[in-house]
Image 1: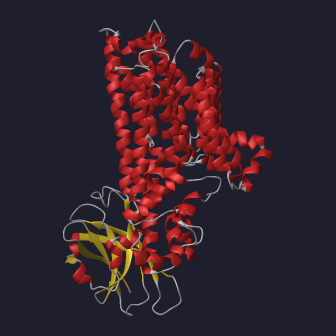
Image 2: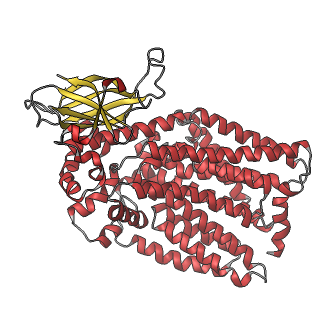
Length: 587
């Protein structure tokens, strides 16, 4: 729009007219460092996805297998069925695709989550150019900050839990819908681009529809977009949002059942407020709820102050400011409805990793707003920008000191899932571990015949086919010098003779200088059990200086259908063909 052009030029001027001063060169260099920091953050999160991968569903993710196994409803009924307070149409379509094309191995779901998080960064980066006109060092700084926030390893729970695709989608759809509205506003003010503005309104409405059918909070987009359209004096857009939003919400509420726990928070407003503040403040301090509440209140107060200035930003034609404030409002609204429905579960639940999908987007927008405000300064822009960049780099470095924590949590999560896989494959009932995977362990065992018959999830993996086969035909036997390890415990899981066993210990592949990939047990040359590698162990570096990782523990299960003689424990090592190396035995 013609009237917005001066503002757009102001916002990009930091990158174009900063000159060749020493500060300007420092700003340019730091922008590359921040961009590299964002890229490195993305690599860390991708690494978490890979090393913590398990083909087994987790908790509510079992609905993906329960639906075809029970056959209680049609596909359309299952897609429409309410889950707690949500209708998860889009995420259930992804589950169906994962079920039919990838045998419910969670592959499609986990890849989708990571790709959606990357797309949030891409759309924000696009809007920095298309809406704000950012270029050069300012754009690189903004993109690096967005990547650092939206792909932060503190989202580890989303990166290892396939069902969390429903938490990733609303943020992307919210950004798309709001960016679409801003571009519609910009284009509709210019006679040269007015004819093509409608496509951005269509994009905005389509994205809002996607948000509504991803998670309950997606419905917040309709009143938010409607009020924004009125503020921007876009009558056609406001009418469009009213009609589309009314139809969408009416359909959403058709045959809707409100969960009973959603009303508990209304009676405890103080608890709800503390939950809301912790929801956002735990981004900074996850283990100190008092500080988390303080940080959360500061962030929410900043959001309120920006909302009060929203009309001023509209009058001065600052579409990027308006865009970021609207996204922050969506995140704040998400936090509020979550607090309203879940505050009874306590502050620890407010700091749940998957909730950071919206909390981090909130803080990302606040940081981008700070950069956008500095870009409009006429004096001292380079110096203030340099200070902000240094602050961002300090935050990145500080976060890197704690990056090990989410990695350990994610890998332990993956190990527990792998342990549950071994329990289901062998049929050895480890109820305590399976309770962590799903609230009703007996129900999981009832699904095993169907999973085995249809080769779903772990029963698609080669390890599930090993039981009762000769060890020597499945693996090449390696000399004991190629590996080392120990048996730390052996626990009978029933009262039969011989009993089913749960074994635990540690193992190391000396030849490849890495942990083994799996564990099998054999009695008289026949494979009688399987196990998972990757549990955390405290290492004595003085005794084992050649071990480069602490994830060397294993847990395995041995079936009762075996001879009374000793059971050999074998580490399955890397390489082609795979080799089996004896590390210990159970007498």
